Length: 315
Image 1 (cartoon, helix red, strand yellow):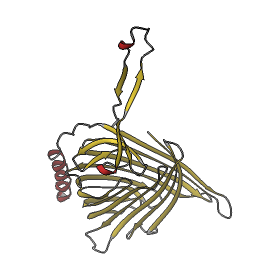
Image 2 (image 1 turned 90 degrees about the vertical axis):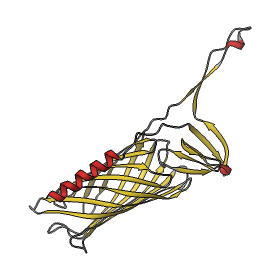
Image 3 (image 1 turned 45 degrees about the vertical axis):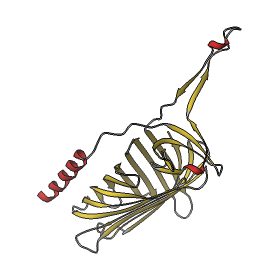
């Protein structure tokens, strides 16, 4: 038991002592590219060859200077009323910079119903809250799903996670990850895991971002059948965001947890979403979630596959 608490205390000590104060927010700009695309965001780094933007979907977007056709500050422009003749020289346009909000919110809700030989209903909701300040990024993610098939419960799951990243350089970052799950169908009363790690921005294109992460986690799972499992594991993860067009976005992530005891035990969580933004803040989302656990509770299937359709709104 003592090694567990030493591990968790060490994580907290390292993350709190090694965390510097956030950097100041830079200029918010709109970039018109040579290919006709338009980008907006906060300038977090700039040199004679490229600049790096941070926005809602990409925390470190690299844009080569030759690819930029025009660069404009993002502003709110208000003009005073017309001045009387002779006083026109005193009339001025007031330009007030728009202060970018460091907060990002994404809320998705959905209801999937099937009527036929078997009747099924599934309610699900997801809320993401992100905070970006300088080199820091924090993302809270809360999922809920409840459903029945022919009157039998087939989903009652709550999952929440909190992840904080800090960029050490343009490519390399450190992170800490915390996750907690309740799943009645899979007989999980509570499972939580926590652990730090190292990440790398492998791809940082104007419309494509790919991150790789590796770290360690401590996992404690308590089941409704009275059994309990706690273990240390490695966390290997990959996330992808692809802005296919201005309205179409593809998001994908895979988390792989090989456990130390026994060595052939592991857990995988994979998710993919296709999002169509029919309005600046509204989207229609199609998602696939697959969770595989090699050693689940007795009587529980190893694999859990879910298909979801949701309506999303971003703030």
